[in-house]
Image 1 (tube, one colour):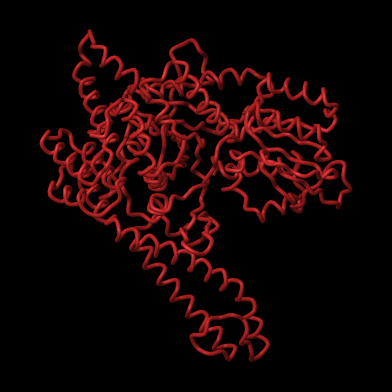
Image 2 (tube, rainbow, N blue to C red):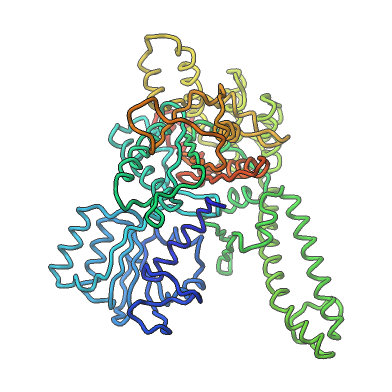
Length: 619
């Protein structure tokens, strides 16, 4: 597909690891100054952020394929390796520039190939030049590159800006204009990296007001200014990159649809993320005595690729099926080679004719890999099952889905769960989902829920915060026709923009029963590009259109879309958008990105922090 973000970022990183030279056709790494057949061995130096960029793309073993023999964090003391070139991949910060200058002064490496994750500001470039000249070390700096890779690609169509707590920062009532501008500028800078990696100039759509419009407007200006540069990042072979049709970039604010970020989900992937805290496609299993075990979960794992969106009970069944098939295949090999039935295949009982022997030997690596994969998912599923039983997670999933799809609640079941099993985070998530799923809530019901939360010693700051912004949103809607607005309504509009206008209208459109999320429905309408009352009020920014004039002319339908969520995304939204792309005729392509990928408990922590900042207290 045209918009394969993972592939494009990977190709740029491989080029960087090859000292920014093209790879050999045979896959080896060579240098223009080296003998043709000679491989150049290098050292890789990274900061923590850039290590996070590389982790989901390249495993440690794969680094060796690209001539990287050692890699080190930039902030640790390192020994000198004077005959080897060093590749630095770091963010353009004063601390990193100081460290690079110090390393060059000490002559730690033969040459320094500096790669910054985004554009190196002029003052920092001058600082680097001054310090290396002062120490007579400038000759060691071979090249300096702005790589524009300051984002994390988790899958072909999923990326994160790795920008923590953006939701808190943007919605903080005490945040001044300057702080908000800094956050928006950071988001815009990293979104620009994504678009320059894809080499696309999209048509940008967003709702009026709030963070989405601020980001869209600033991004539009940033791209416009950049397109004026002769050799800009959107050029391919000297020509402005333009496929037959440009993609659409749809920018949303987390307040557009809050409940999706809070609810429990029954699918394997969201469960692993929620319960085991998957980060950068890796989960670490808790271990009491032995060392903690960690597993990679990405497309290289065929079981994960095939089953990660399945409901948990289906995954458990599939593990049983795979294990049974594995045992059958082992028995078959043992029969053919004269081994005993049911004995695990270890390659130690191989007798019989040469043909069967060779077949058995050839099948050994594949069987071993299958067994590893089955063991991995058995361990994960066993741990998940324990948590599901311990916390009654199936009960939370069912009740939340019922509330969000029906817009009503079984109060006795709700109170029973709040007083029963589950973590404090589970209970506050259920209570907030109740608030968001109902058009209107009875004061007596809300009070009984708050009492049940207090009984379980749950901090209700997040609940109070959502209750507050829901009432502010209602006030805002009620006064929309009024010319004079009170200060609090002005403040609410400034803080939340279009706010949670989709809370009651869109929250009930969940995935169960073939329904769509409000986000997915809106993206579908924007991609169609036809008049639609749901999206007619959305703003259009086209960085290629003249600044003056009547604005951009939309040419829908769009075949490709980039959907970006400010304030934290999640796997439920990602799945919904991938389903939209697959069921469309012809098939469309959608990339989903967010400031950070959050599970429900992590998002509630941010809501709690905002509740505390607003002085709402825990009761």
